[in-house]
Length: 321
Image (cartoon, rainbow, N blue to C red; front, side, top):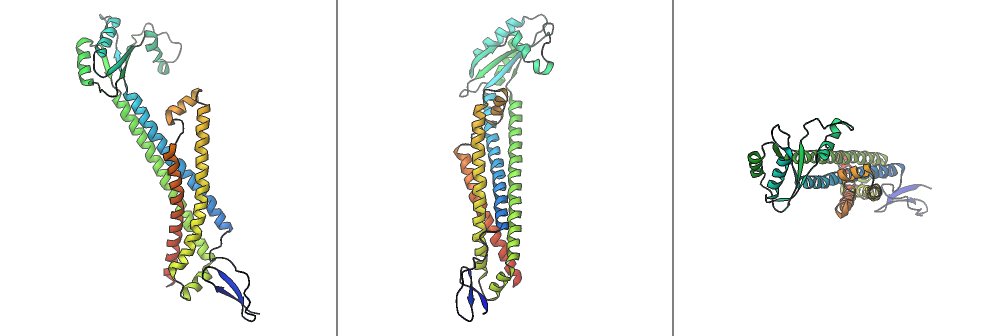
């Protein structure tokens, strides 16, 4: 009995030339499950997870940067230096009264000598006796977000009435915060692009391996007149399914990671380290926008996987002539 492999339109079947007996179907053109396919799913899941982390890290840093700059912009400080021949307490009261009369200044707070000295502790260390040092005194201004203060006029008034006072609106610090946040977002974006590029290389390698494994079948179909689009579509359908499976696994893992990180951040909020992490990144809450990004990323990865596999197969078929 002679066995002949026939293509039934969607899958291969085996028939007998003597008994005309059709045997069980042998499966689709591209195997549905294989070691290479499972490995590709794992790679895509890991890459999707890392890409989701990079994208949402950029989102968290950008949102935190807006909060940082907003908080800093709502405050300004006046530094009053001790000068020989002038009463620093009188200068403090005069500067604070001048600030209270300025539109846009909502509240003023004069730091005591002990509070001003405590601000130097991170640089000079703890336990130092600063009583003999001419320590500047601080006035903290709370600004009205709806009524911007005229800092140019304020500086002129301070120079006129309190020459030993200096106004700092933190614009340099705000600019540096913005630069730092933009740099972090750019780095996260670059990492995201590199991860997608690595994923594309993995998909391309897996597709070439699948074409090589099914080389004889692909060439026979090409010779007997099967349309290149049909053959490429078979590979595209299979690899898109693999890509979607891996992307959903990686995206689900990323969602679980952020939910767990948000829960842990709430538990650690009362600790010193937790407060610092919250100040830097917020409460790790990515919100509906972050979850939408992960779902869109999973769908994009599946489409990218299918598109790359189709393009590679079509290129291989064109070389066959």
